[in-house]
Amino acid sequence: MKTVRTLVTALLLITSPAFADDAVSRVVIVPANGPWFINVSPDGNANVWLRTDPNIKATLPPDSFDFDALVTALKRLQTDEKPESPTHAGFLMEGADNADGFFLTDDTLIRYLVASFADEWQGNDLFRKALRDQPMFPEGA
Image 1 (cartoon, rainbow, N blue to C red):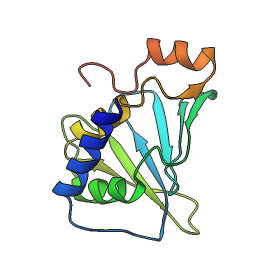
Image 2: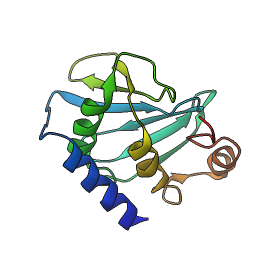
Image 3: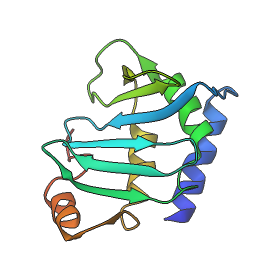
Image 4: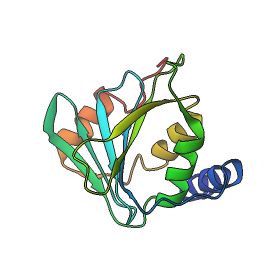
């Protein structure tokens, strides 16, 4: 899956103009019709938790995500109109309490990127069971 992740990161960078925003302190992704929240920090670590039970959660270590590439791609995919597959994202800015949310025009690359971590989330048995029962990106969403 590391190869898939590298290819997706390359596509994110190729399809997006160069952009880095030091003011973004966290990226939040809410998959379309899915029950999960995903937070990514500037050091590339990520946390995921089930919306209905925040005790069901998992993490990825630093350097898992290329934060600048992710911010760049999300800025390019940002739209105010609700698309067919309404994946939300948001940027938590330095010093802010809430993230500014928006829809993504297309979440295909984000789906592949998140899927590339399927076996790497560090969570307990409850997390693994919940993930099997309720995928981050449900089929048909």
